[in-house]
Image (cartoon, rainbow, N blue to C red; front, side):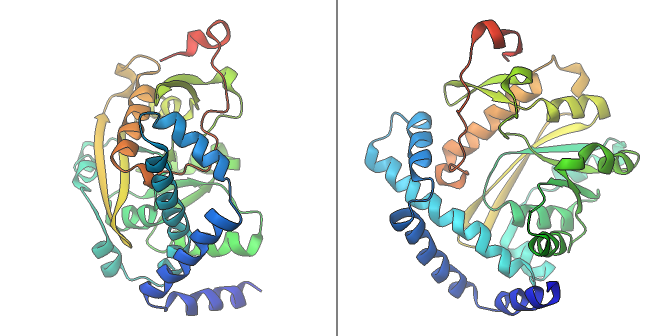
Length: 293
């Protein structure tokens, strides 16, 4: 079954980019107008994040979001067969921020938010960094699709480890050189053991894992984002936060990370995954005050 599915998607990957985007536009319209996929969540999130904007402005952001959301997944089809030359033409980044650290002997933790297109980012970083790139991913329940996604994600050298078995799978990589890519704005399973950081004016729980891991492994911390300069072409920005995470007080890395993510979103508001409930937990000073950063 896998070979049949792979063959089908490989043939699709040979379609011109313009055909992919015609399909994307049609699906985005269906998601927004017909199926109204998480539309109430998207609009609620945008109201929290941008109360100063008019309703018409937020609707414009939402419509652009749905198009970028669908692009994010349909562009995967092209990534199945994309060449390294074309990949580097379509994804530009200041890789030297990380590569200049290689000779210092320090490992790197790369923190990012849910920016589009993270699949492009994974492949381009792996192809251009001196370090091996280790990426944490959430396995897909469908075994055939999970195998397909793992195949193209690893095409340029990414080392994929499952979030569901992170501790065991990361242990061998931790003994060698690495860049560890982590999406740091995940909703925590429980807000009781999270940092609480200001995110668009509202205190929001943030998983402690990225900061805890950076300090435990004494890894340099780099923030990253990426955004579409036009359809199918991306710009990425790497910013070094620290090469000595243990010199910073607890919570400082998490606070800086969320500030960086918010600033990136404000610059490109439709480039973020608004369909997840980012503010589903309520802050309580008595319960959560000691974890506020």
